[in-house]
Image (cartoon, one colour):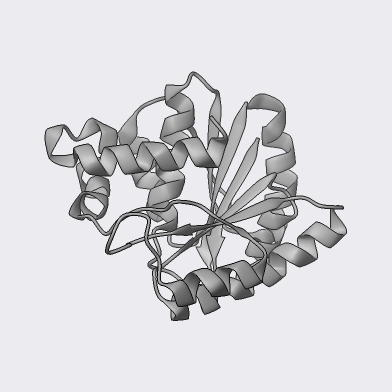
Amino acid sequence: MIYGLTNSKGGVGKTTIAVHLAAWLAKKGRKVVFVDADPQSSASQWIKELSIGIKLEQVPESGEIIRRVAKLSNDANDIVIDGPAGLSATTRAIMLQADRVFFPCGPSILDLRAASKAVLLLREAQKIRAGKPTGALIPNKLQKRGRLSREMMDAAKKLGIDVLAGLSLRQSFADVAGQAKVVWQMGTTSLLASHEMQQLMKEITGD
């Protein structure tokens, strides 16, 4: 399975979710390749420090995505691609390779409007690929677990895309990269964050 994480803006938790997804799959005994396609490469050091057997590939150039991912898929159970912020050629290339694409999104209508631009790219890819990839929105930084404004939910429905339960605004999600861990490794202080993240991983992977 090839998973793509992308959006039209930064600061929405894309890399945090991508790294946790790779760690979740590895914990299940899957052979995982993490493709860091973000020029900032913020995920790469995090993946290295986790030391849990995830193969790391840095592929910031859009022209390399299709060729490299096709090759890597022959030697992996799952590939997780952390895409760049913005609607670049790399974003389009990810959508032309992934089986499932996820759009982390802040909890405001302005965040959703930004995400809607990425959904338009998704629709283009689905036309080219006869239905693939599937896509879903991941609300992030929610002030109250699982609750979005009615305005945002109505707008999301108009996009015609699935909306997952999402993640609350928690300090543990902000701190976890600096500790070179994932939230379920952080102990009792992060139990709620761990539960939320693991529930999201189950939704993403269909477990």
